[in-house]
Image (cartoon, rainbow, N blue to C red; front, side):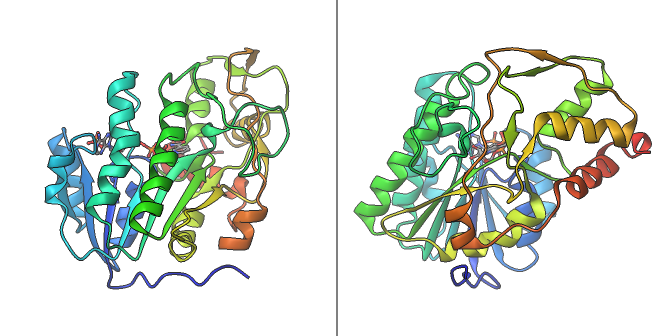
Length: 307
Ligand SMILES: NC(=O)c1ccc[n+]([C@@H]2O[C@H](COP(=O)([O-])OP(=O)(O)OC[C@H]3O[C@@H](n4cnc5c(N)ncnc54)[C@H](OP(=O)(O)O)[C@@H]3O)[C@@H](O)[C@H]2O)c1
């Protein structure tokens, strides 16, 4: 039995990183049922307009700059922290991603629940072993995003510290390959297939992940909020199905007639599938079959190519 979901309708929710791939559909959905505040640096005017058009209140701030967070209103019920930066500058990325979650939690210490979205990129590479939440951590994504894994690990630590210190009910959800009609990792693979670019694969095949469809993560958010504890609940957060890059590329090939080409690269991210036991106990199983999710994505983003 999953936990009791939080009551979201009519609540006052702060969402950080609202213009990002993962959070944008969440803003779109929650703005129809709740009072949504959307926080980002908003360097592009059109992104600000896009969020306002969805009915959310824009808050312009930088998580790395605690004074800028004075724009955050009082009386919030919930916070969903999706913001992330991968500039490659360790000082800034640690300040925004790790100190940033601390700055935000201190500012919103009275909320009923705080969800910090982390990543399975915090786990050390260990081959095909599904990672439990207590598996060894490591600098998994260094080859492509030098600051990412380290700043996500640091962010989790700051988040736990502030949750304990300020007694803020908190959940840390480690996302695995979130995707939907606005993109996701497999869409980049599709683009590479379209352009005849070889896709790097770790030689220890198959390369397993647990893609999580947007319909599922939107449905699970109230449960993640309901699972929050002042000890900071930590859970993997991916699809219940394990799928390899090889399988999803081959399925994209079947849908589009494009042929994937692969090349071995020992520096490519290796298999990173998750143990789903804790996640299932807290939020239940996911329901979107990965093939349906990918077909829908391509129908939305490249309809002319779906056969
Ligand atoms: N996408 C994936 O495949 C994936 C996989 C695993 C985990 N995740 C996690 O999911 C979350 C969302 O990822 P995403 O891919 O959607 O990110 P994204 O597309 O890169 O978007 C990042 C968002 O954060 C905001 N942001 C960046 N720096 C900020 C700062 N200093 N202060 C305030 N806001 C800031 C950005 O807006 P501005 O630039 O306007 O500030 C933007 O809205 C992250 O926590 C990420 O670690 C993602």
